Image (cartoon, rainbow, N blue to C red; front, side):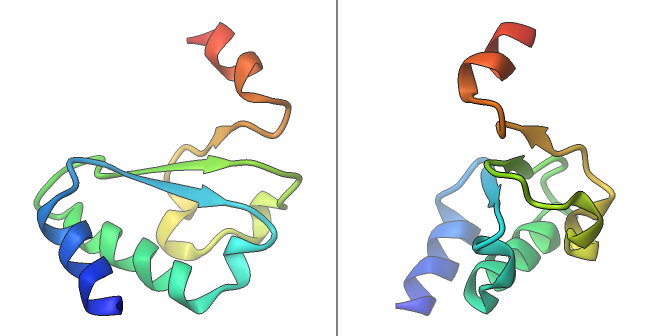
Length: 84
């Protein structure tokens, strides 16, 4: 199924939301998806939009996402949307 995921990310997405959490950060498949998204950003600027959904420590963020602004949904989506 990885080939289907890669095809979808490469061909069917206009943006990719990278859900950053204590769990997702430690999964190699998820990290591979993030890396693919960062590669696509060379052709589509700001392709990857990272969001944090729990108390994940930003200092542990993968280097490929570290330079991006991570939207912090840790306190709930309603808090973030009120700031937009």
